[in-house]
Length: 118
Image (cartoon, rainbow, N blue to C red; front, side, top):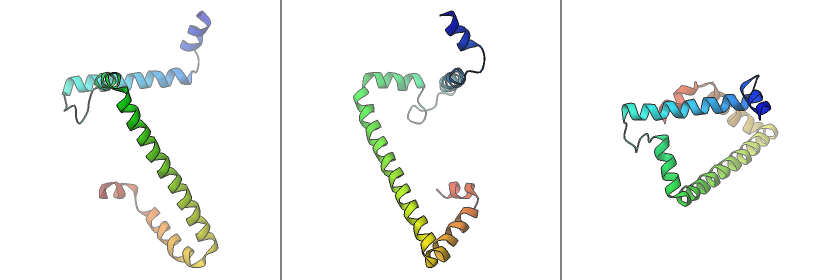
């Protein structure tokens, strides 16, 4: 037991650092919600989220499954379309002159401009 405590508290422990930062972030979030009292629809407290999860875990799991499924579908579509576009650009002079040029131009636009548009 003492070896575990010594290992946990001393040295370079990445897991400990992540747990401490996550705990501090949740604590600051909870304090901020109690101090500023924003609408629970906009920013609920972590304790309220945890309590709601304990009340209806099935609802959260169903939505988790839907969100995970949509994320996986989006990732697969992005990979398939990206690879197809890359192969097309490599083997087609027309696509290289049109699509690749457009992609280079879009990549040169600063990222914050894209965020402001949406």
